Image (tube, rainbow, N blue to C red; front, top):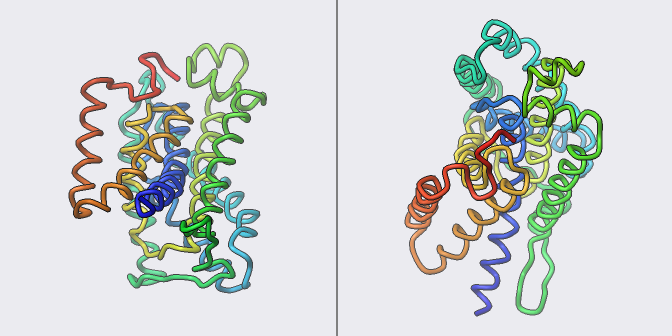
Length: 294
């Protein structure tokens, strides 16, 4: 019984971080109605940024949260402004321009190969003050890095939800996601809002990179591992749904952790994809998605 409780706890903590990796992806889709195939590569950039910041300065990994997400925000903001906005302008009559998918796929390959050229293919880990540390609750061992990541993931999701509901920019993001033409008529610059959406989504990837780096290795194609999970979670929870991303992440984390106690890990992958397909068949909009736009 203790082993199952331990697996549930580990799965919930890891699942929340999976949800965090999917949060930026679902925000960008919710506002811009395009799938960002470069999201995993942006997470990789966040992980490498945190890695080198910690490695070169000895900074505590969670102090890196004060540096990496703002840097990633501006990276995403100008990436959208310079590379993606021209596509939207050229295809302004198209609600969901497919050319953006091609652009983000190109960014994915460029970032991954640039990282490979600069840092090589080897796996890197960083030792921090909290690496390998834990505390106990009776017979249950709780990893401090994963527990901290769990807390930061929940706080990030709550903070994003409050930002969307309580701030002018958040309300403008929602208005643009619902009807960009009507939002333009109300004086909202849709392209500036798209810049903010992409910047915030990328900054969240930076947060994920900072909370993952204390216990996970980083290498140029690490984004693919989390990207696949993120796409599954976003569709499972509902495209554009913040709570759906977090709950979907926890579901995936629990399946990985609990089912692996009773069967080979390859079977847990099959179960995740099977549930994913069932949800798509029964409720194509996802668990918390809606047929109408977010």
